[in-house]
Image (cartoon, rainbow, N blue to C red; front, side):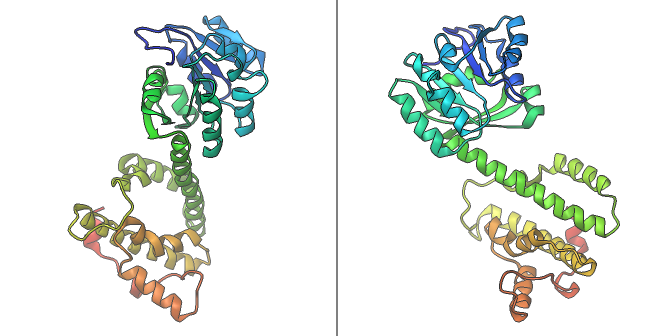
Length: 328
């Protein structure tokens, strides 16, 4: 199954799609001792690889004549389907035991359907989306989240480690995509929150480029949002659990600061819908339930008939605790 190991390669690896992400990944696969077969709709995209010893192919079917692990990094579900199961797709020539690794972010349902089509030919498909962006691709430090049987993941891993700093077996086919979607949900909600914070800072007369520098600096220290992703469940935390004290403390700090930010926003006339949701839901998300500040804000909202959410707490509802501030 697959192309063997770096120490004992039995076949080339293939790569279809040499765009901004695919090209730097494929560049690192030039080190695969069994050889590299590359394919792109733009013939000029393959030329630098051929110059370094790779073989160029014009279709997925041509790649699959020799390669036994074929990475696919194209635009969307339709292109992935065409590369894998189209008239000139990988399945037209792939030998049993070939592994197709789809690095494009597609629907998990598409991955499951294509895996079933591949299985009819004795071919294995894993959904293996990546995270880390162009910088991670250039540096060889991408995370790759692989959905498929464990033995297929292990067959891919020797080649994946040439370009990925964190290969992860996510579970069955489709799980890699589901993990990527959850990861990117956090990513883009965070972008939206950053825009919301920037609006508040700008309204308050703050230099938002300096704020951005502070955010990047401190997130590099604390780990950002990932710093709280420490448990293997999202169920409520029992009072005698170690994490209960940790997350209760985080909730207290968070609710206080969110309440202060919402109060500032109210005075400046800036709407912070994500900030309001965060104040409402932080404690529940951490598994320890809402704290006093959140509950007070909820009661205030209910008294004002704000059914869709709640507004900013008053100063009295968000006292500053200097001792808590010292523990940041």
